[in-house]
Length: 275
Ligand code: MF3
Ligand code: CO
View 1 (tube, rainbow, N blue to C red):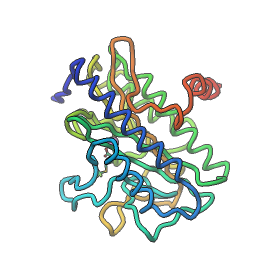
View 2: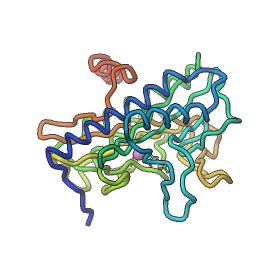
View 3: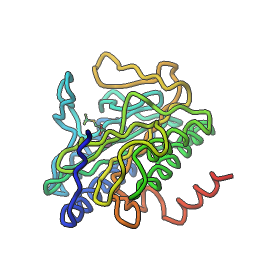
């Protein structure tokens, strides 16, 4: 049985702060994304901002079972890289790239986790489409995160959001519950059956991750032990929000208008997508 921790009012209040902090880090990194910048510099911005905000990195030193400790405060995944790319002085952003940035902060006892895939300068139409589809599938999944629904409704929204455009959800990685620990129950796969799984309840906090490949869903990990890439070299994108389920629906704790746009604009994208 999965044991999903229900957060109290005061815990949710604290997670509003860690979520907002996580979104500030991501926004600052986004402002620095341009051709010629190294992925190392982006990690430096993240480190500096985490320090300024009075928190510590959720990622630095993090150990997945059987892995070396993670060496940086962001994951930076370029083009055909899916997740967990390691920042490097040798990797410079190039016009036309897409770059997924995942960053999180531990602040006053709670984690906030979010990710965004940025275009570097002008990008090709197929790359633009991948970013739009992945972002919309995240918002659809968030809409499904409400009391009375089941976890499978969230997972199905991610899967359907990718597949209805001929893209593939990434099956080897998932979103997760979040709170005092970065990874709590439940696991949130990017595929699943609507109406199945645990019932969602007010007070659950979920880090929902939309991860989509243009080609097949397969992932392979590079020799560095971390960087996951597509096996067919197709582009991959990720977007992630930390979301609390409240009695009247989801509240995005990592929302940030400067980065994600205004609410009205998000609805426009969704409507557009309902054609
Ligand atoms: N957002 C990702 C996750 O929650 C990134 C984790 S990377 C690591 O799994 F640094 F924590 F390893
Ligand atoms: Co996460």
